[in-house]
Length: 339
Image (cartoon, rainbow, N blue to C red):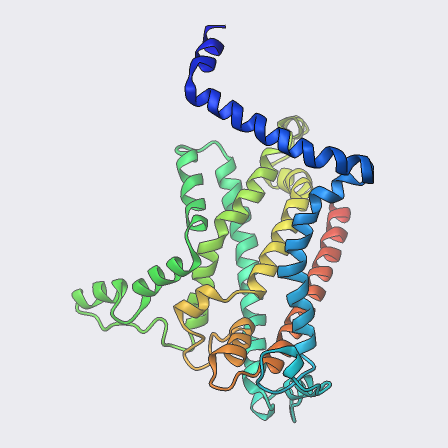
């Protein structure tokens, strides 16, 4: 009772209550007449309208314009100034004398970026799922300093992708931290990022390190939602750790694993920032991914080939949609099989 009296006597509290009351009064003046006109059942659409307007303006409209640009040519930016060329942009992307030899393709950089993206997605998603699963199992166990390790693994997610790439570039570059140690030890410096055979490995390593904590958190939440009584019942029946993982943990964790697979796949296909800052797609085209190819063709070159970039982005979106649907289908089938 005394606390409520103190709050009422506080001038700032009275001012806050007055502002809230004024705001609610103004909202009531707007909402109540509108509700009488359109009815109570249609009111949710009124509150959804701002979000729908933002989504349509910044998502649906750019998607429609991108699809239109894929069938136009020229270097002009405005749609009304771009001539319709049909499927010429797609033909330029897909025309190859020998699809096993990218040097025979009209857009060989597109095919190199496509093959690099396939390798990157496969390795990145596989490493993230495996390491996140192992890490979440360890962090869910009764270990010392568990809260500290959970925060440590999640900390890289809070960093900007550009900051992550700059830090690792400082570590791995020719005059970086590791090579500084090697030189002090009398050894020769190693070109980590300038070696075409190893640059993709380091790109995958850095991106896995930067994003693994987020997916570990998803799997850790799924593990904590599994009732402990199931493991106790399994121990009574003589179930070992591997059998418990196979018959209890994995089936109940499968929905979270599917979420991790889908999110990691989407993130890997759209990867741009870390790779662009870390290697710039090099050396040569060793780490050139599809998103960077689209950026280079549409915006980085002297000639802005917006139509070709749009056709490549439509191709990327189609691949991502098909891969996601297949992944969901396979995940649901494996989930029902394990159940």
